[in-house]
Amino acid sequence: MKRFIQMLAVAAMLLTPTFFTSSASALTNTQFSLTSDPTTAVVDFSHLTTPPLPGQPITISENLKDSNGNLAGSAFIACRVVLFTTTDLLLDCNATFTLTGGTITGHATFLTSQHNYTAVVLSGTGVYKGVIGTVQVLDRAPGDETYNFNLLQL
Image 1 (cartoon, one colour):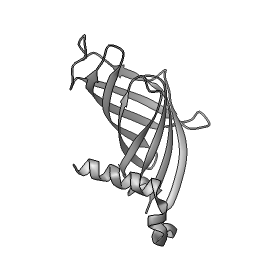
Image 2 (cartoon, one colour; image 1 turned 90 degrees about the vertical axis):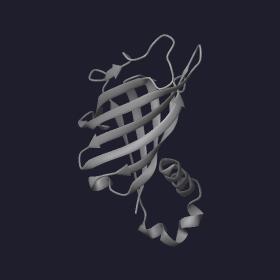
Image 3 (cartoon, rainbow, N blue to C red; image 1 turned 90 degrees about the horizontal axis):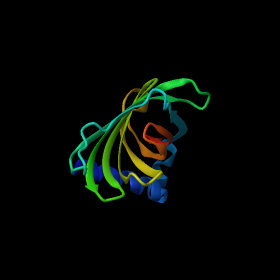
């Protein structure tokens, strides 16, 4: 329930900034993109049965590169199957991005047929302490993604 309330708060802040005009000067907006390195990605489907069952895990761990192609950190994404159809999986995922200066945690629920979806940033540590926001995920294949971060920090 707490996560749901956090997600609603993030959505409200991002979609209706006029409610926050009195504190707008205290907010810092940071945007950046990272790409996964498919050569280092480890995607674990080994716990899925045929057909997949709700609750079964899928994990992805991958290195992340900045816009110059330099190592920027790593990501660990832990998903659970919510629903299976004959052509798709609905996944519920938690992600931890370990970057220089701190970590960012997020959450997304999406269909595997979606190749462009939004995740919610729930928290951070270090230089990312107090962040909320979104991550636009451009998913070319498991372990081959671009993450476009849009963070707000008080």
